[in-house]
Length: 492
Image (cartoon, rainbow, N blue to C red; front, side):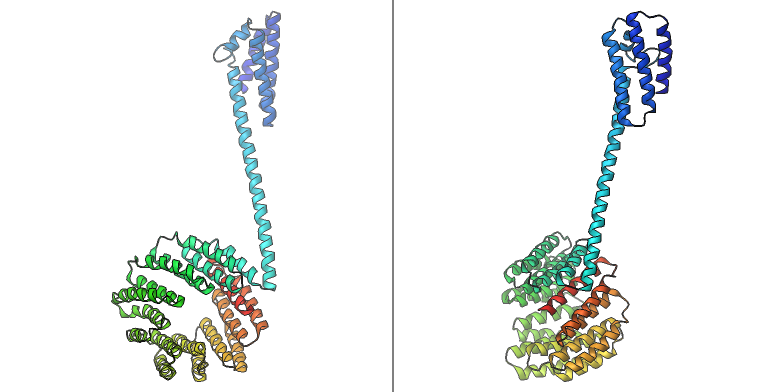
């Protein structure tokens, strides 16, 4: 622009030396235009600069239109503008376009910055509201607010399998809390995510979890369609152990649904998959799930045959407890008593205290569920002895909570409360927040079973405060959904 102004002044001087009336008028306009261009050069306001350049352009166009016979008009009309100055209407138009482009970009950036500012403000206000709700929830935990926190975190999860699993847990908690309509919507969301999973193993597991949640909600007809999808997907898994384990889990859900024919079909496919596992140590888990499905299906003979194929004392104990439960339901109480004894003998062979307790706990639960032996006190005492030996603080707390719950179920409330107090002391030693929150959840269940609902809610309040510190989003979502589920059960 400096070059243009310098040349314009030179031209103006030359032209003003000798001028006619038209020439004089044209020259005056050029001088005026030169001043306008100079002002435009230093004008910081782009809108004002555009106005000045437009005025300068209009002046040049005026010279050409009103004084066409003048030498100045001829020069301005020539390609490239003035021969001595290089200024032209076209060049001014280019300068106007450039200024308008800069203005448009500046305005766009300002609008973008404003949108970003508003979005940041919205997020800040939303976060402030979330923190306020969270603080209120910590002070007075309710199922809805805990689930609300769990849903917010779950929606951020990237792994579809984890997301589906948490949503299934959330849906179950919503159903237990009495909000079945919302629970079904959550299940639909979980199904939409599961349907997009590419890996056959994770997809089949996700669909199985959804179907299981639907069974828990009482939607067996809908669950049947989902479990069929899970079976079709699992049957295409090429990894042998994955296929055997998922098929056995699907059979267990079908048995829970009461679909005898489908259960038998899936058990057949699962057993065939198990037979292909060369390492027999890998057969324990799928065979346990198969035996459970058989026992639940009323096929006690088949369950006993499956139990005979299990080498692991841990898995075999669990299966024998399931079989004994099925025998009681079938009316064979004396036989069931002998099976329970076999389960106890088998449990004594387990070396790991953690696994031994887990096995004993399946016996305790089976006895309690059938209501015949009311969880034999000898078994409970034995389980307590083993629980005390567990070194891992997390699982020790859970084990003690299970024993306390069993004590309360048989009416030993004083003993249950003593164990709970001991368990709370152990829970304080758990370093991992997720494990600590889950352990406190078990203690809360034990407290509620012992009739202390106020204490149970207070313990869940502590669990919620600890869960809030969990950094991993998937672990935090699981913890919150479990707390909500427990709270919903306590409120029933």
